Image 1 (cartoon, one colour):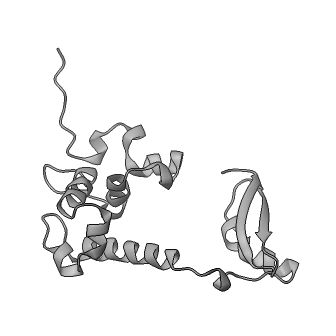
Image 2 (cartoon, helix red, strand yellow):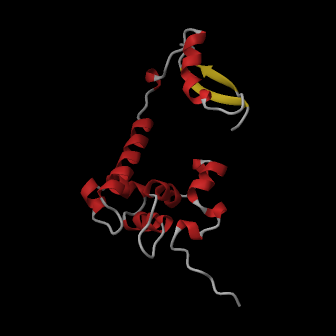
Image 3 (tube, rainbow, N blue to C red):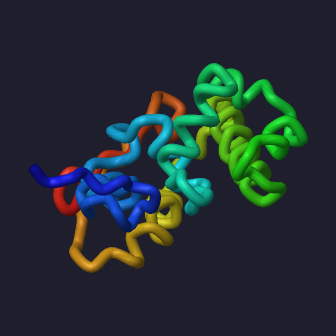
Length: 153
């Protein structure tokens, strides 16, 4: 009977089980909270890979809401989390909060073809394959959604 090797490093995992590779393949919405935290944390601690460290943080803070409510110093006080990792976690949570607070009236308005091109130019300039995108607008020409109709998704 073959003995199971402990997975204390992300590199010990099969490539298909690594958080960054799973995000690239499946999309961020398919990852568990601990995997998303692992991507932010980048590395674990001796005996605990980044995913396990993320799982422990979620357990100790009683989930993402507890992590959100904890202050910076409290996050720093956990084993394996120093000032840099705590700052990354708190910054990511704050970005998510700001995105959730985004108000429809703050959406960008499109009044010319140039406005539409400017909206997607930066992201599309780096594409290796051409894509066709549709920009959906409300009755005031404010961006509601941008959909990729043809190309990489």
